[in-house]
Amino acid sequence: MNSDWMCYHFGIMKYFFYFGLQFRRIINYVSKKLLKAKFFDDFDWNNYTSRDYGPQLDEMRKVNNVLLPSNLEFIENLANFRLNPEIEQLYRRVMELSPKDLLEVGAGAGSNLINLQLLLPTARVAGVELLSSQVDLGKSIFGVRFPQQEIVVADFIKEDIKYLGDYEMVFTNAVAMHLTSRKVKALILKMLSYSRKYVLLHENLTHSHNFLEILLDLNEYTEFQFTIEKPSNSAFGFVIITKN
Ligand SMILES: C[S@@+](CC[C@H](N)C(=O)[O-])C[C@H]1O[C@@H](n2cnc3c(N)ncnc32)[C@H](O)[C@@H]1O
Image (cartoon, rainbow, N blue to C red; front, side, top):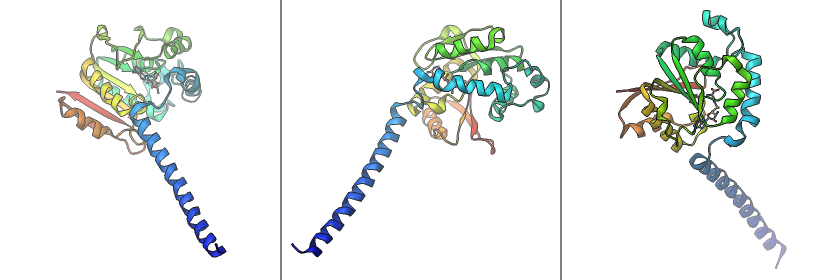
C-alpha cells in the first residue's frame, strides 16, 4: 500500500464523514420541526405560569401600566396611554366591532378581560383558561378589579362548557400561535360553536401558522367569511371570522 493511495482514501472518507454529519444534522432538524408542528405546543403548559407568564406579567405591569388604576386615563384618551402597541391594537379592533358580550379563550390572568370591561362597560365579559395557576395569579394581582364573572378553568378544545352560553365575539390573544396546527383547527371550530357573530384571533402572523391555509381548509366543510388583517408595523395581526 503506497502513501498516495492512503491519502486518497483518507481524503474521500473525510468527505463522506463530513457530509454524513451534515446530513444527520439536517434530518434531526427537520424531524424535530415536523414532530413539534404535529405533536407539541410551544410551551409545556404545566410549568407555564411559573416559568414564563408570571415574570412576563410583572414586566407588563412595570412598562405598560396596563393593570394600574391609571387605566382610567386610557379609557378617556387611548392615544395618551402608554400601552404595549400590540395590546392596544387588539383593544382598538375589539372596540371598533363593539360586541355586546365577549368570551376570551386562553384568558391567562385576565388582564385583557379587565381592560376590555373598562373599555366596554356595558359588555358582558367572560373567560376560559386551561390553567388554574394562571387564574390564581390574576386573582392575587388584580384583587377587586377582577371581572365579576369568574374565568372558567377548562381545556376549551376538549371540554364542553356550553353552560357559559354564547357570545357575540369569541376571541384569543396569543394562544393559537403557540398550539399545533391540528389544535388550531379544533380551536377555531370550537370558537365558532360559541360565537353568534365574530371569532377573532389576535396572533403573531409573521412567525407562526399559515392561517390562510388553515381557514381555507376549514371553509371546505364549514361556511364562514373571514378576513386576515396584518398591520404593516406589527408581527401581530387579526384573523376575523364572521358567521353567515
Ligand atoms: C400566551 S398566554 C396568553 C394569555 C392571554 N390571552 C393574554 O393575552 O395575556 C396563552 C394562554 O392560553 C392558555 N391555553 C392554552 N391552551 C388552552 C386550552 N386548550 N384551553 C384554554 N386555555 C388554553 C394557556 O394556559 C395560557 O394561559
